[in-house]
Amino acid sequence: MTPKILIIDDDDLVAASLKKVLIKLTYDVTICIQAGEAENIVGEFQPDIILLDIYLTTHNGIDILRNLKKKYNNIPIIMITGYADVKMAVVAIKAGAFDFLLKPIDLEQLKFILDKAVENLRLKTEVSRLHSLMEENELTREFFGRSTKIQRIVSSVEKLAKSTDTTILLEGESGTGKEVFAKFIHQQSPRNNAIFITINCATIPKDLAESELFGHERGAFTGASQKTKLGKFELADGGTILLDEIGELTLDLQVKLLRVLQEKRFYRLGGEKEILVNVRVLAATNKNLEEEVKKGTFREDLFYRLNVARIRIPALRERKEDIIYLVYSFINEFSQKFNKTIQGLDSSGIELIKSYPWKGNIRELRNVMERVVLLTEDEELTDNHFSFLLENKDAMESDDEKFILQIPPKGIKIDLVLRTLIQKTLKITNGNQVKAARILGLSRSKLRYRMEQLGIEIIRNVN
Image (cartoon, rainbow, N blue to C red; front, side, top):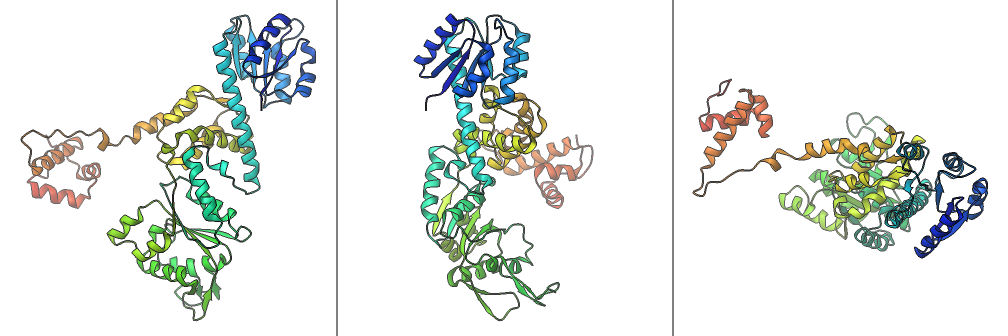
């Protein structure tokens, strides 16, 4: 669809010249010469972008800007003036102007600002539509991002979702959105009218895990006073259950889970009646389960039973082209939540966000945007709004990354390296072994053992 631009300028020659340029740039353009008719023409033409002269013969462009923003807040308005007045530019931006251009207009700058405005509008439109769907508790493929990588994954997930009972294993770092993908699978599946239940295996106390999953009868264990407690599998009958962080389950519970997956039946803890269930099981983990199998902490037979279909959710750093799309989505979400009128980000804010490592992935990005939107009263976000991230970035550079060990060409004995490392650490802590152990990532007892082994005298004020 061709973007529509309204030019509000009572200099008909300038307006006509600008219109010719914009038509060549493939815009649909209308001119408003009579400033007093601006609001009516905006209502009739419904422009996507407005170019507004500040110094009109009969009207003040700033007043028109303020009036239009009250009624048409989502339309980006670019102010134009023949006077290099910095103060007036500041007033215009504070009043809600998207950007500011000086006459004679530089065509490259005009094109850049218009491209930015169009992209801003497109993102807002997409995000607004997605937000409406989210309010209806419906996820769409566009919600996850627009990168080729993520869309390929979504396509695979959509196909797998059509099955009623295929087990799917979702892998990925913390914060990549595994639970959201699981909800998407449920919504796209034939079970979408039934219940979806998530249980985080990492947060269940080990002595209550079996009861949480499979329920218990009265008196099954100390504290089991109620007559019957239904477990998550029984509650999810007919629907879908997500076992999040499944790598945290104990080996004995893995055995019981394997039987449920194979036979669709189980006993409540302390019960004598076998319970039959029809549940689709999804599992998620941030661990490498194949490595856990090798280490003996995860059952091989359970791994292969879960690994019917396997989806790896990429980290945010692997799909950077989705970052700004997600940022606008969160801006829209939290602007509505906190009653803010944030229009978007400038180039400095975009560059900072793109360069940040986002080790916490989408969860970290969402938390950052919630904080920024809550605290700001500005309508445009810049790099200054995200300055706290630079402090975090420096802190994330671990000592391991900064430490460089020089190995002599002839080699060096490991005992000498350890002795020197411990001695220098004790010097830094003035002989405080607790602090030294913490710096070296050791327990105090292990540090003392190493010191005795290497003949390091246990004294304070090490020189």
